Length: 503
Image (cartoon, rainbow, N blue to C red):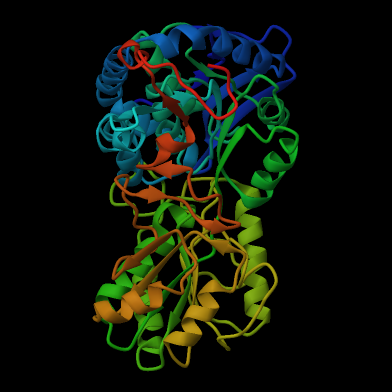
């Protein structure tokens, strides 16, 4: 597909693409895979946040009163358009994120597929129902204007998974994409526009930190759906302490680990761990960065994961046969290299990856490439600031030899995060026993920590979020239950009486 530049498309507000007459920021996005590839240029104006929220507020009354089937029909139309434009979306994701094309294709395909989940199994969690014996009803009501603040690593799939249930349940949306990946958001806006959504129902505003802060602090925003880092999630909560009724649904980071026991299928575990650690260049919130293995399997497992890491194809995401592209930018690469240097200084043995101070280059490309790294820990209990207990968001995994499963559980839990984890053992009983003590929101048996299904809830505990931000239960963050006691005319024949109440 011919590469083209997104040239000043403007923000999508009230059904139109609107230019910034007095921009306070201009974003130029260059592909992290090749800095010569200018993916997009965008002029941004913070005041557009007010305009977008106003448009969403004005549209919400009519949108929530529209029949649910009519809203669903518009989502189906959006689905058809997203399917038709899948290759274009995938190409844009690959260029602006640096995500290998096979990976970007999977993300682009999930955008249309999400409609089936939202209107199918997802809708069951927010179904209105009647209690005939009372009589009473439970109705799920839209919050109003929902702010969706998206991440860079899945710039289409993750915000799409929050926008769609919000719309299906009668909310209107203002979407603020990451300033690292604004171009996929333009394509989503075009899909909503082509589908014929009423003006103001979906709005997209580009910008940096100032725009995001204006949106999450806005008095007329009724709910915030955020995917990103734990420090930013905390700031959003702090900004809304005086608005206890405002929904703040957070999907944050992780320091995810696998437990591998002696009875595990070693080759199976090694391949799943390598995929979970290195897919998307480790830039998944569920990526594996720690492996706790019992003595009989620990060293052979580490060696095998390292062999796989060395054999992985790293290169430009649009080149054939590439498994992994670059990390998102120079800052991310440098933070990862700094953390890895700290690990080396603390005695971690490098089994795969680049030596300290060495840069990995892809011929003919000026990008932010790193090799997948595998390290052997000198001590299961070791703590290295910035490495062992902090999210790296890059392709690096450390293997720790532990005494037994109990120590593995303690170490897996010993971070401020609790997003995902995995246990590799042939015994279902052992898995179930360990699962009772593992403080994570996503836990897999003999599958990597990065494995997740849109048909399941998705989110974490502790500093990984507040349990409810994504997956099949996403609609619960987009509507509130309204309890209704009913008294139809046929039940009004006998006037009610109470002690001491006049007849």
